[in-house]
Length: 171
Length: 105
Image (cartoon, rainbow over all chains, first blue to last red):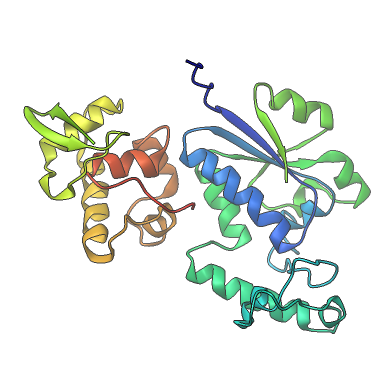
């Protein structure tokens, strides 16, 4: 008989991209980890920082260009999932906004919070939110630019220190 | 499905210890399950949350999400985690005699 694998006790998630669909999975996984009683933290770096910047966190968009998996069912157009969504169509001004609007409606119907509310829910649940120092320096940002849920700005070394014993997941 | 002894009566539970029939639930059973989950004693505040969850379950067929309980001012998320440490949605549903929550959020 094989031994039962050790349950996961701690997860550290990394978000490096800033479209709506890049940020949500980490929030769902991180919050889900807390719901299961695991320790959880999310480290936002590069464009992922957009989810933490007060001025941008409400306006993250669905990327409608360069995603070959995108199809006509996906922007909730209720068309067949086998019909591709041409990337050139996605480049037309307003299409990304429209897809974002459709997706946000769908999320609200499914009881999925907005990004700022999700960050609040995650930290209320005991999860920790970190911002990457290098990316902050690169984008000329200070902690004041970030939402209140960010507990610290960390260097890579500090991130690894805080992640001791954790499963690290790059989303 | 197995049968086990809880609060002096024999009840049917699934593989993870959730009651299979939420109708047999009462406060004694709740206290007994809570104790197994490391929550002792079960306070009035716990019971308020459990009652709301059961009411929602009766009305909608599913236990309410953590977000819903926060939004309706039933219990703030922070307090819920403090009341049911180590997995509030699952633990609270278990103590409330409901099935394992199916939602991801």
